[in-house]
Length: 100
Image 1 (cartoon, rainbow, N blue to C red):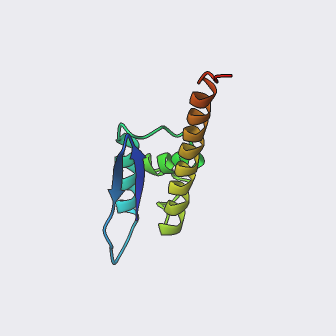
Image 2: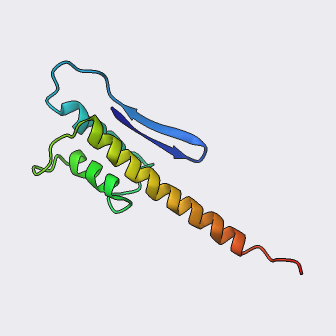
Image 3: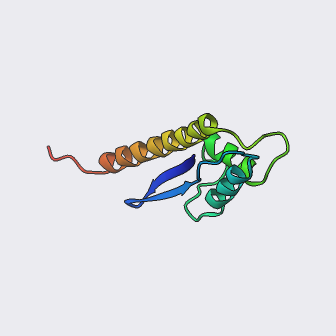
């Protein structure tokens, strides 16, 4: 389980190891690594980033999550990132003068 993100033509990957008995420690540690990274967009960036942050601070209401929940967090982050990228391209294209 892990988290991957593309930033400036490079990937930031936080990945765990397969564990036999999991008390959630690894997931909390991975969440903290991601949330402490300069690549992290903050808990307001997407629902997934918010959920990841809740695990990084070990919020009592939520558990560490499982592979399915982390895939959802990651997907939410990537969808928000994609929307921003498309908006940036559209803005750049709108700023280009059109010859008549």
